[in-house]
Length: 600
Image 1 (cartoon, rainbow, N blue to C red):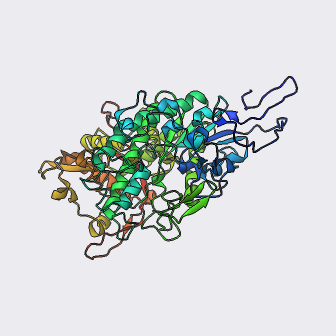
Image 2 (image 1 turned 90 degrees about the vertical axis):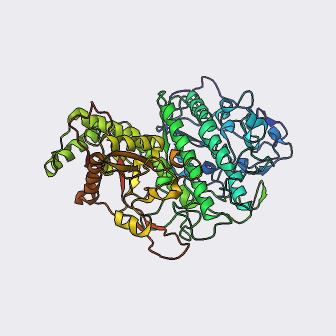
Image 3 (image 1 turned 45 degrees about the vertical axis):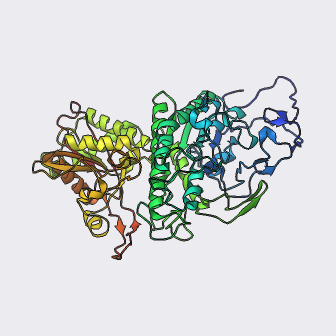
């Protein structure tokens, strides 16, 4: 096989067909009866393999490829049917665009569409199997004790689509490992709130968790899943060593605020709890990708929640409390009947809609376009450093003390921006296009360190949405929200004349005031990080941040919320504020003389 994936023959080629194979016993019918050989044309095309679970296969977008939607009589690999449900059209992997000519990637070169509904990491590779099975596997609480031949198919790495000629691999995986289907069904069916301290999940297999869901699920996601994800990524890389691997995360399903409307028996507090679990899954995935990338693997993470928030036209894409007809995630769907049987509720429940798949395809297209070689796509640190230097030189005289930055410092800031945005799953050349706020150790050491530790814990927080203090105070929360006893925080127990409480995400952002009251409180990576720091340092950061918000060339607009005063009503976000990046520069020696600054 040559580098373009074509086979060379010195004699007349021949092929035989059989249904006796690793995943077949010879009892199935042969559904094709001819194979043709074609001479290679002038264009070789790219080689793309789409792997993963139902979020990639297009669950809910029937009709499906026939080999992924059928009932069997022979029970291949112990399965009476194949319900991998690879959509014939509409699934986001089939819509990804080639970064070189903007054509549909799946329609040129070769396209291996092997994503399968219900897949876990052990359905991707046997490397993810616990050997011997862990106590949680033996008890039926987790599913890592053996390889999973999902719906009778071989593990996806074993199916033969990956090789040294593969250019791109996409994958969504992990949601089934951490039992999200069980959790959604449990939250709907539960008489008591599923986010309560006493609630224990009963899985679909009838097994009851040994601990409350909020504790046990945190353990599954935070402590056990990382090794499984890294096993998957490494296995893909070994099979396709030259491929660019893109890991697509799962979008948040519900708004940041408690909802005011019904949601299929899922209470408003339980929805926020599910958001927290999804947030922990995103953090675990981002960090696993980052660790494998550090080993030299060409892999990146994409966080779709950044795009799935609210559209530019104000449309809300949530499964619940979304704009009617504009949701990007389904709620409960009507019963479905397809080639593999009837399901109630429909199999598309809690999965992306057609519009949601288009959004995911856009993100994947942007991600692989960004990673084209730097001589054709200006996304390297040098271009970003030039942007930083040019802006500092243009604005330096407007500030006291005057802004200055060396070329070395600008290059370090640029590389830091690339590293943090990639780790956070942000795509679209953010370091070249978004406003950037740089708190530095030179004049805001405590603030920069606090920001850095918050972003390290929750990589998605590198990108925030601006929200004016007036909008937050009037419609959301007071400036000293964290002093409310309900939060129970001890990082900023009292105000002191010489110190102030620094918080990240900033209060002046949509994400400000985030708090995980279920899985860690002030120690959760999803809770605002609070730290008492010198008043002068906090003031420096706040002053420069405010200046960026109001600088004309930054062109920043505030988020808006409802302004409804009524008992039991939570004001909902109406429009997103402008995106911006926070890139803390915490190396004191490297940033001597480099004062806190921003770039529009």
